[in-house]
Length: 171
Length: 180
Image (cartoon, rainbow over all chains, first blue to last red; front, side, top):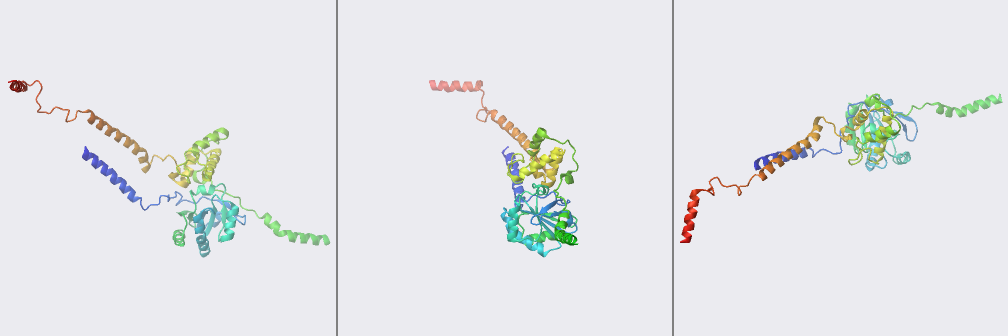
């Protein structure tokens, strides 16, 4: 009986340790988006500053980067200059910002102070964020020229990370 | 002539504003559930039924920005927005299955508070059951072992029986020696 208990206990412990070891290099926050490989949810939202309506469909034919962000999110501050610089550097890719749970006034002040290189849109009742499965900001989606979501990145991006993801949509 | 000139000037001044006013802005559009799960397959709800059903369906969804709270229970803005969307979809006649599928297509199975009985998820349902049965088996064997007489209580196989005539004779002899 003691030998059986030892063997069964040892097997269970080995299985648990194996599973834990396999998960060591996995980010528990990184949940794969089921939208990858699917057509991006369509939207037409109002741009902060100009008031014009920007329709995602108007960018069909070129890769699009959709960045969900807010002024209350510190990593978004860190990421903002990277996005603006890269948007200016790669004009064949359309960058779009979508405001997540923030006020238009704060966003406008932020953009006035820190500059912008692409349209920033106001979400309506968070419906766009929900359709894209946004659970926190910043979250960035990469769409290819056909409007299909190719990649998603959670967290602030460096130029290297951004360029690495852009390569996927520009292929 | 003077009037005509005034009209021309007025039109020239107003022209940019008129052009701007006449520019038709495309209507605002948010992603719609129809793109994900098609047309509603149920009955449109209203009033008290809508209120109750909204809470029931929202209780099946996990709030993505909370720690283990359902959309029905969380006061966060995200959960409030999600609950609002559940209400709107029920109002439009979407079924519970369609609504859950809609959120699952955006967030994955993570958003469902009850994991589906499929794939690796079956382990979530079966492992506790297996552990329960295994535990019951272990308890059964342990109890059976405990209720059986222990080695100290059990007479040894070669122990003499109390009514053994040989033993009685030895006792008698030993007793007799003691008496002499």
